[in-house]
Length: 164
Length: 164
Image 1 (cartoon, rainbow over the protein chains, first blue to last red):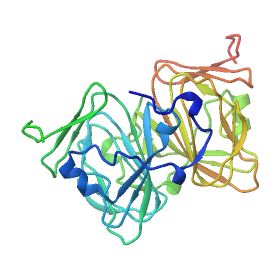
Image 2 (image 1 turned 60 degrees about the vertical axis):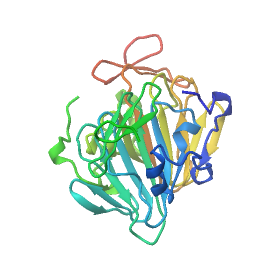
Image 3 (image 1 turned 180 degrees about the horizontal axis):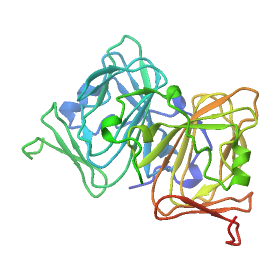
């Protein structure tokens, strides 16, 4: 992958809220990506040249969600809520979170997750995920399947394997 | 590694401050570990069975520090400050941090880091590090060298290779 933050350009430290949001707003196919207009991600780890895991500062406007509900086969994830009260959806149903709460999603568990902002206030959280190659994401609630290719890019198909 | 948090016992979400602190307070040799009495770590990722990276909620009492200043060869690290104003020491010298600030430490850069609480208020931050095996940590300011063995445990020696 092209390193957009070579060593010489890396900051010592930054105020996370001042990092410019990611310009590519979503990896999803376009007809799904439009559903994530209220989601904004600031890539904190990338800024320091980190490659083993990513850390994003993510904001969800009221009614926005983090993702389609999904489970990873290889990559662990963890979210830590900084502001607001997102609702976490897993196989166990909804769980209302609050600032200072965290939830982890072990790869390979099959238990799919997503956060939805069902409140009228903005939500802000840190999301952490590693970059173990060759990951697959499954989507129990949507006709979608995702596989990472050798470059780390996600390839989305319908569940029958046909492309979007 | 023994999984102290099997799938059936994993919570959906937790308030991070209510997670019991790690009972093993330090991996350092005992004569160094005593210098880290004012440091308290809550292992958030482990609680959810995550194994690809660790996320700790770490508190530093006034005068306490995160670690000896060190650089990893293989494992990336990132810290995100939640509370207080820790001072980050790197090869560039001291940088005062504040809530909402983050700093990332790319493995292999050789630039060593640590946080010191030089304030009179408690400091709280999230620290994230991946678990790429076979890591080596170097300590420019101390007569210490650390290597991970096959089980992931750290082995500390003096710089001339003799054990403590």
